[in-house]
Amino acid sequence: MDVSDRWLRTFVAVADTGSFTAAGRKLGVGQPAVSHAVSRLETSLGVTLIERSTQGLTLTAAGAFLYERLSSALADLDGAVRAVSTQVAADVVTLSVSTSLANFWLLPRLPDFKRRHPEIELRVITTDTDESVGLDDADLWIPLGLEHPSFLQATLFRAERIVPVASPDLAESITSDREWSPGLLLDAPLLHLEERYAARYQWHRWFVDNGVDSPRSLPGYRSNDYSLVLQAALDGQGVALGWLHIVTRLLDDERLKALSDPIDTGQPFPILHRPIDAYSDHAAKVGALRDWLRHSP
Image (tube, rainbow, N blue to C red):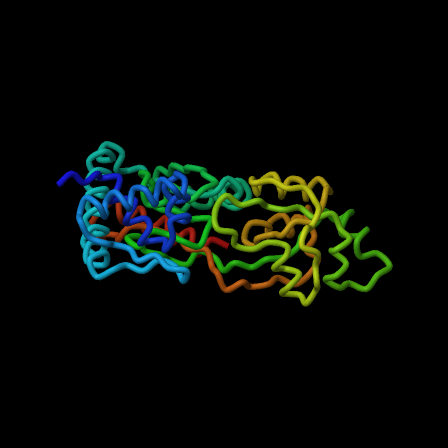
């Protein structure tokens, strides 16, 4: 029986995410390649692993049996490889975050972390996709989207609270001589984040949550880099949706102004990590960084 490791990992990704498309995003390949790999695995094994229907994907009994054993086995295998490859850098703790979180949240707070934990050497990886979450050599991840590998544990980082923000001059021009209402932003220049992962929150949803009918197509500047979206807002080019934990300091410094009260979406951002061994010196350092991330103001 000739079974490819790639087929097995693709099958686990489909089972983890619940769809061929989402698995493709996670693995960095197209949906047809995912479907083909799963079909080749089923043909090689001589069993059906996934039932496909208009309602979605369902694991068969054989698929569930294979997934239960395979997911933990692959996690153990990847962990063993990582352990061997990172032994020489055991004192370095690696954190993977988005570019915008690194620029606007993490960097201003790093002096506090170094003051509290001078014994920890911190390495920061910036990425704007979730494709490598759980697969690279990071110790902690703060993902962008809502899905994450089942073999990782999640600890709350921040609630997702959204508020429209603009430069003080633009905010004044939008609200001057008019009583504030959410509908005013229909006529404002809007800044859009085009996400390369499962979208968390966009302008259409903000208008719906505020009881405003909005056109299907909303004009405005678009970028897939949230740092550029925020920079455009700082430059007075438009109104951006601000993730409150990222824009708080910009609001406190009066570089941006909030145009409404925040909305809590109920979809918090987690810190993802592998199970932490309390008896490992490296794990203790990873735990210290995780706890600092959770509690840093």
